[in-house]
Image (tube, rainbow, N blue to C red; front, side, top):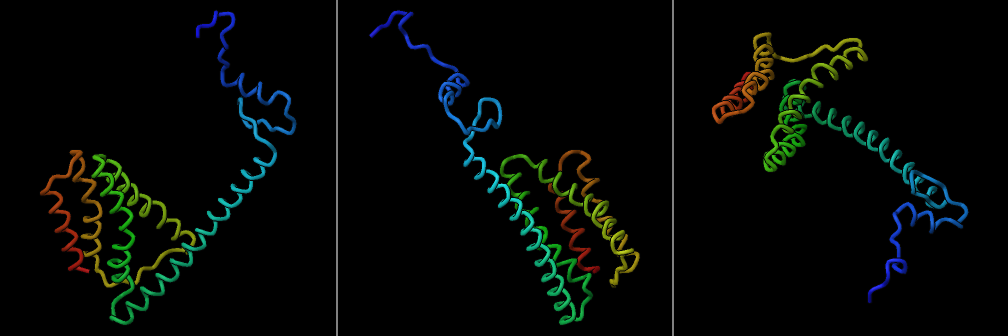
Length: 192
């Protein structure tokens, strides 16, 4: 059925609809342009924010406790096999803490966006060496490492850590470069 233009329903815009619906309601709180919440909805939102903040700080506590368990386990393993805690943590913790980066890498390569993976790895190395270790040294009044590595092995370790920076200057990692990096890692394991 066709209505004359003067009898057709005029479509209201979203702000007009909201204002018309809420025109006579009391107890509403404006939370932004054209968005109103009833008082009990605001209470629920604030309660959820409190829950999220509590969960955030509880997760820090869980990570802190987990780190303590890992440190005790590494010390027990190193004493049991008569190895230094440095070498055990170098291999065991190095592999375990690399699991998240591995999954980020797999996901980014599958989605054909490997820049995320490379940025994550290189950024992580920079943060660990230039932020976390210096902060721990400041808080702990210096860091003394008790390890069995001589200066030559430490320099080789530094070369292994820096090698990916030099290999990505051409913005790609070839098959040869990948095999080269794995070989460097294998040599480092042998030396330590």
